Length: 314
Image 1: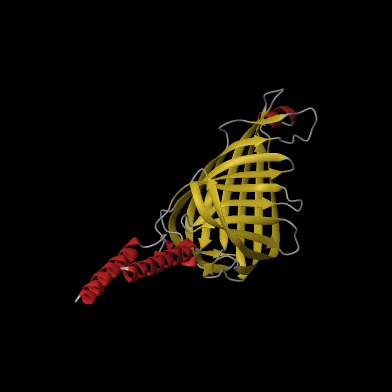
Image 2: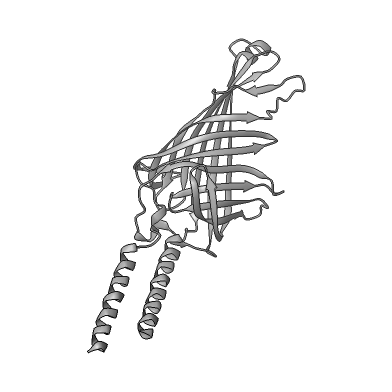
């Protein structure tokens, strides 16, 4: 009997080890498990802080189709996503004058656009439109502001590893071009400048940057979408002191959370997952473990013990 008990305990230990190994493998971020599918949806809330002004807005992202487009002179197979959301709040608005004070007009802000994500790299093209209305508190005059952002970010060297785990490092060199077009109008300008006044300005910026990525470890992150076991990835641009922390999960195939810090270590941007609805991952490694496999091991063990017992009996 003692030998049977010892044998059972050894088999239980083996089964437990298999379960733990399966769970550890599933926790890795595999490239194929992060691949989007048509119909995938995410809802994010963004908080941005610039010169003391805080803007909070929400964006829904939905993968609509696949196509081929030219991004900075190169053809890419891409997923196409619609962007749709709203500006929720704008605080501490700088007026440029001590005599004027502006506040955000609630429910006046909209965010729309398109996102093109290359299938085989992190090259993207984003077209984003933000519009909102500000009211001058003493005169009740309003400013209508529309911002159109077109950002092309093309990876020109480097490749993301097939599997990301604790300690994984990789490097990208990325060429980024951003065109910003801002249009202002409204009764404030009608009164203080001229009736029907509208002004549009466009600026373009270009940069080529090398960025280091390092997977620091695992971390449990809770957002409005739930609690997730994530991998914490630190992002540093060469020559800059600020950094970004990303918290990624193959369960949602996107960021669960992202925080950008400036050179002083102060947060200037926060991205958090609110909700998601994505297709199942493409590999079996995404499951926590396979109960059926463990059950087979247990049943086999019981059968083996019974057979061994019968043989020793006779």
